[in-house]
Length: 327
Ligand code: 8YV
Image (cartoon, rainbow, N blue to C red; front, side, top):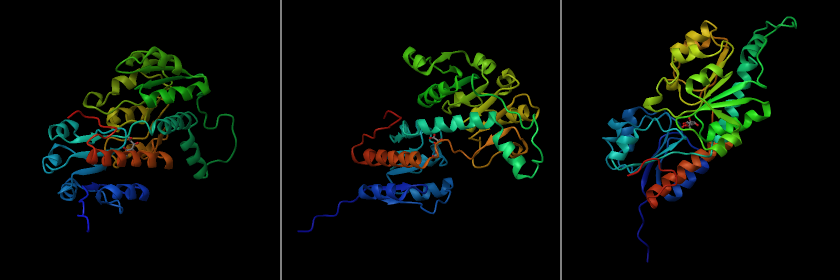
């Protein structure tokens, strides 16, 4: 007897993913993929989501209340990324949709990248390389492209979650003093392990030589760092944003960099990606990368695979490992 064909749940994967991740999903689900990696507009997302009960999304898909109102059958949104500010979680919860993220698998990689920014800004690496590439290197001089020291400097970490702690651990190798600010003070044993002292936001802005932003992007954190905060920074301090563009008032930051009020900045994330303020390109005292904090081959694979695991679990058991909302 031929057994009746069991219908697999229909899902959409909004962007290109690794072939092995797609193969895993297809074992369990009826998948519409997007391996040509077209950026989907809100209308295209709504069209492709018709009839789907799950979606594997990326940080660049805006999944807001207007979109969710058009897809009442949707049961799970599984985002690739630890941040999920691209998803209106309250609206999803109202529609009884599970939302998941990918915590844990990217902490060490993002911490590596944060430290790359610390070193690259301190040593003026992109500026100096540009100088060389442009053919300006004619002689070695005592004062050529002087940077600032990282060793024994004060590192200020804003947002002391898993990634912030991983950054603090790296600072030990450079004999740095570590201070941090967080919504809630972390446990004493964590402070001790990270050799980090809790300070107010204001003190962090005033005292740190390198400020690394690692807070989640929430409405409260919109422009958490504005002109008044930047004005507190030491003239030889560096601001590194590896969290989300909207956390910093970019206009204020560009002004400060232009007028050399601070030593420099490392910017991994922008307010309106992939569009960014072209004024950044005119500044020599910034290191700019296109949102690459978690971009190692192993980590991006782990993130995609974890999102896939969440999607399969959400639609088969109703109990995904990394659900961020309570239904
Ligand atoms: C992702 C990120 O690459 O995890 C996050 O929150 O910002 C990045 O690591 C990005 O979200 C792509 O989806």
